[in-house]
Length: 271
Length: 160
Image 1 (cartoon, each protein chain N blue to C red):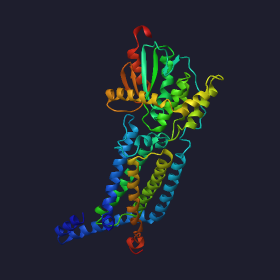
Image 2: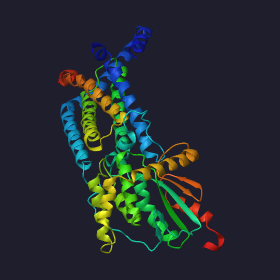
Image 3: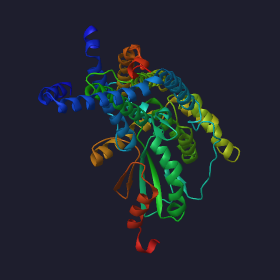
Image 4: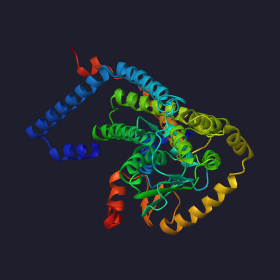
């Protein structure tokens, strides 16, 4: 830019043209200095103000995103909604339902939590309670030890045919690393037991099962099978993923996506 | 080190662009439910991205980071643009202050996020660590511009 100006000066030559050029240039420089002077006149205060504001904003972000803060669902009381749908192990809904959703999920996966909190209740209300749809849960623990520990504990709940209420509390309590410690997993079982008739949940049996770690093999085998299925269908591993009568629905899609697929599969005499 | 400071302004621009690229990638991964961060076997990006700390009020941290890097890029580009258009005239001090303040905020928050990764989430995301290094370097390299004394406004404005 500077060299362009210099070239312009050289081309301008002597006379009134040169004079007016110089005046215009001086005016432009003064205007430029005026703008800069205006900004600079409060630059020091502005810098201090912005630094202070930045530190305040960072502190607010840290406060809001602190461990155990309001970002976590950990403090909400667990309420088991119950269900009129038949339950058999990890199958939710009638075993004779014409449409089966195989759900590949991970108890640590946030989007799996979204599906179970937002979409599953609607599916239950609209299709499962009518005997049209059933959901079969398959373990695919991809997110480390918490995922495996939670899945193994849920298998302990399967032994007492309490997988689904325990499944619900796990998705409500999923969170930061370490959320599925042995102590927490036992504590979640107590939250479920409080919602059930007395004696319905044998906590001693559950605790022994969790402590033994015996269900980790069950989870591992199921995860290997699930991984094979998903690799074959999608070429990658992720959760949640759903197979609706063999048709893939990847990710925690809105309820309308499930409705579209299910409605296209509902037999004519089924609704 | 002397070389780094000699090319400081070029480095600032390059780092801001790198920051936009890293935060942009992490934002894409965070917003697309089907994507997983490519960790290349280093660390555990999925655990970090899937943790409760990856979002604030439903907004992915990566998106906040992308906004910060875009603002830094705009400020750094504005400083260069100013100098280029005005015969190398030093840009307003406020731009340097804003750049430093923003990079300082990014560095402080990145330090907190790294602490969370190490001691709360117990997993490391190499992309997040990369971003933390970038924003820290941006802060260090932006700091010398704060030392430039403001021009004498009265002198600039001429005799009164």
